[in-house]
Image (cartoon, rainbow, N blue to C red; front, side, top):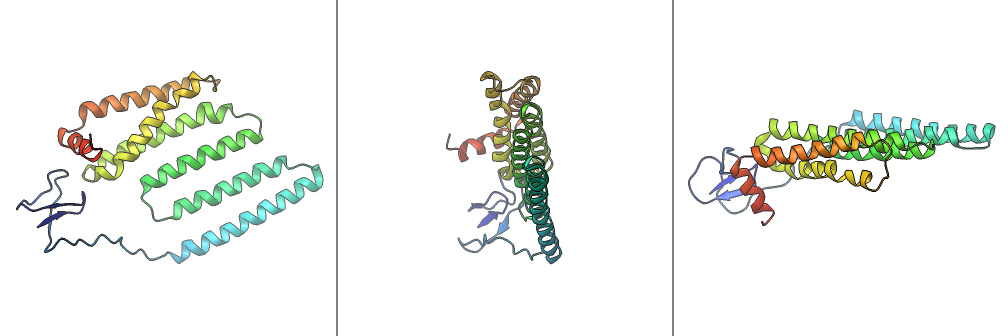
Length: 220
């Protein structure tokens, strides 16, 4: 029996390459396949560096809150610093994890949007965060996924669902313009048109065998 590690598919017939991704098949003797993830040894330098970084940021948060309240009887400046410190802690944590950079890209895009919208609320000016930065980050994330999918086309299954979600996000963001939530509409319009262009291009240029595999996986 042959097995494709990329697609996680078994073949009973005697072929050498996967019919879906064209990767070389391996020979297996029974129906059991070891799918346990590879053990990755923890990087101690990263661990200690992150712990020190975490402590310094907590000290920064407590210190700025204390100083700001003591001298100004408010938390305006310290809230900006504290939100930025929390953002840096989460950002570095995601950057140091062992997940694929595609998943990291999604996570980092999400926390960037949350951080900028929170900062906008503190500054009482959320327009730039929602109208400009949000659609720009979605476009950038889709571009990264497109490049990754084409460069690593043999493993397209790993990235297809993320690419689809990202493209749909580019398109659905137009709802903000329709509901008049935004003030500067051009960047969201660009994101919408970019998403439509990507969808149309994928429908036209995606190989037939990949389209059939996507249909099969979605039970269409």
